[in-house]
Length: 98
Figure 1 (cartoon, rainbow, N blue to C red):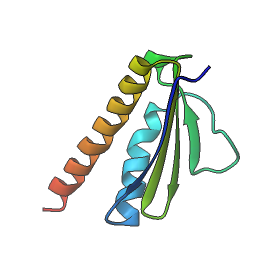
Figure 2 (figure 1 turned 30 degrees about the horizontal axis):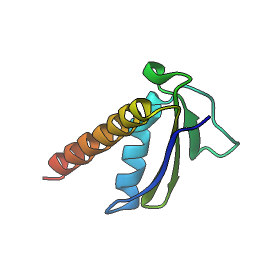
Figure 3 (figure 1 turned 180 degrees about the horizontal axis):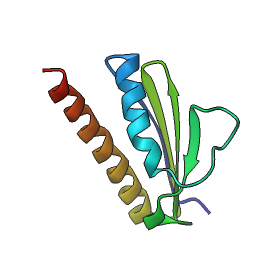
């Protein structure tokens, strides 16, 4: 039974930025694509296997992040991990553009 879930839509300054960040996050995904779309992947982080799952979809300059977890601790860990990776990616992109 799922105890915690969230669906978050992140808007980026450009389609390129969203594409770069999505590409950076891809290696963190473990399981196979959830459908035939190359822009949608479902994953279970290795540290949270069977306790949390994360799904990403990218459309233009948006990334939608869906997190489902068996408990609050797993939910928080997954959310914090992915948001940290996204924030780090954004800061690196910003530095690169200077």
